[in-house]
Length: 491
Image (cartoon, rainbow, N blue to C red; front, side, top):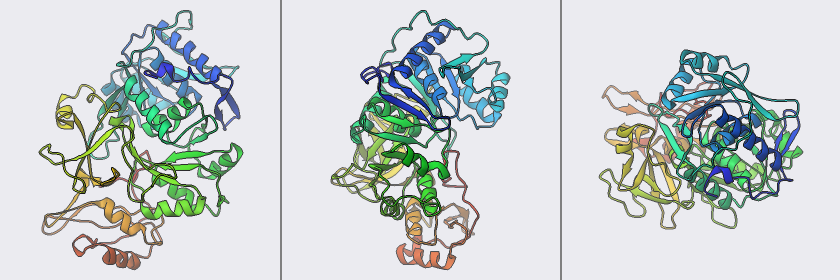
């Protein structure tokens, strides 16, 4: 497979591909493939030319998935966007991506407001009486008579923006070759197969949900259960009803499931073949709690938008999975680099750098960012890490999030892990910077309500060097999160 047009061609068309639990719809691989081909023809008949950007602001569902695959099949560039963004946020992403049309629901008012401000046509995605995805709107053709030319591996398939948690979001163009290489790597690494059923809890506008949980499963001929959003209350009901074998999520979702396990009657033997964690650091304490409570191996992975999602991952049993490590590279090269571009030896901390088929060629029309992002063919991730002698990577934090105390650089991730070992910290601890009287930064802690702050302090003082132990502890009803359920590392 070199392009996304080939994603479904080798799968038994009679096999079930997607279950929509919100209305009970079952969609087979044959129907999915036919819908993608017909919608791709309509897109090209509507006057859209190869290489033009199509914005997709839709919730999780068959409409989003078919629209995405059809756009890439038609040699267009699909730009998934969060439909819950405010109008001014959407306007930035639409302008920055240079979108030509916007696909959304009939009720997405902020999306329509943003598109109207930019004089962009809006096409409504829906399902007709037979359940087939259709588009309607100004300039949208109903003709499916001519199939579009097949995409090329070097064509840009996907345009996503970085999360922007440590700076202005940057547009990342990923080619068909980038995305399909990542899909193959993920499917192979987790041994995905037609007997698997994955529950998609991450949004399709993000690489985690789209590439890590959905496209990789479809490439393997597996089935996915695709609700319109994550619901903690419905999670275990769906796992049981559909015999789910795996899911992938951010640590926040894992922590929510743990906190509700008793009230939701979560099984101690879940039947899950594995649980994948990605997109933020998973503390060793949470990993152990997940494995003990749900009876499945938890595999922590490391991923970035710029690398078409997955970079490294812990392996399935009987392979060695290490708590606190994100595993070895999955068919990509991983190294540690000094500021001056010199590669460091095993065991030395520095910037994590990556190269391989999945790595983008450069940010979208952003030469200044590209100059800073690449050194000697390596992509600089902005993350600090250490490579062990067996090739396993330990990510120790983001360079931009380091706390400077008296000249010592402190990673919030390391302090998080210590505080999360305290049972009183229910979900996660967040370090952020406050200026001291000496114009330095002190890392306070923001544990969940009801946490016993004295115990938190004792835990930190016992397990952190004195110079790294937080000095200020406060309680809060909640800690700030991004829309992807990641903790904000600094406020």
